[in-house]
Amino acid sequence: MPRLPFTAPNLLAPMEGVTDPLFRQLVLELHEPKDLGGTFTEFLRISHQARTRRTILQHLGTQGPIPVGLQLMGRKSDALLETARTAVSAGVELIDLNFGCPAKGALKGCAGAAMMDDPRGLEDVVQSIHDTVGSEIPVTAKLRAGGDDDSLLEDLVRAACAGGAAMVTLHARTRKEAYAAPAPWERLARAVAASSVPLCGNGGIDSHADLARMRQETGCTYAMVGRAALGNPWIFSGHEPSAKECAEFLLAYADGLMGRDAPLRGTVSRLKQLLRHWSVGGIADGAEGRRSWLHEGDPEAVLARLGTLAEQDRQRV
View 1: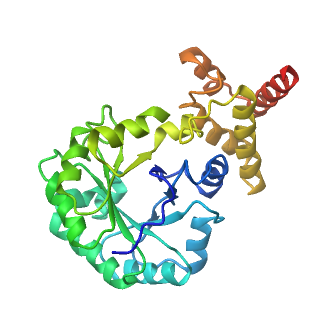
View 2: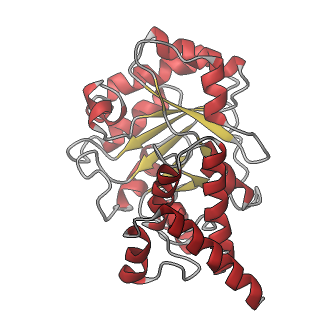
């Protein structure tokens, strides 16, 4: 079994439309490898055509000391296998297979969480990628706890292991539950008991302390954070950022987006995606504090307010 490249037991979850290379890089730069052990790209959807080396490298973004794996999503096909081969030739050191996305488009294409009703088919996809990339590249699988219920949970985990997965990540909610709270951690303990490889738990982590608590209570080797990292990009280290640090992070994200030719209004829309979840630094406290950002219709005013926050905090230091 190939060695997993992670540098710590805390991992950043891939999230479609959010953890693009820019956001991911800003979060990675906040952490030492001892605090944040690795992450994955947003899923690269494979339908009828294989993805090119250029697309794969754009998806990966800048590489550094914290490993970034490539996440693929698609049904078993020549295009999927060819993309995996291209990824290896491009230097990808870890491939993750997404069987957890509950979006209607994924389900219609018999990909993502559509596979939560088909353990045998899931095993076949994992096995095909494992055989394609060889024994040196770890292949991991991201699952949900089931489709409409969790009755197949153990079967799904065993199927991923039998197919050659080097790690199984389990989102503790089912496909039907989507992202609704809570995420029952007892399902993670069941998955650990059924798995012959390291298990990564995902779902229900809200704070830095929850990372260790999940591992202790469930037996998971790794803990993966999704939405909580949008509201607190420092969650992996436990650092408590000031308003200045928060404003500077958000402004750096805005600058990066506009440097990639994103329009101003679209840039601020992406900022509001983060501010909807923001939980640190005192800049969006309470429902009213969050509403004041989300209901601001002038994108220039949002950036100006962030700039003022950073400058005022700097003057107090």
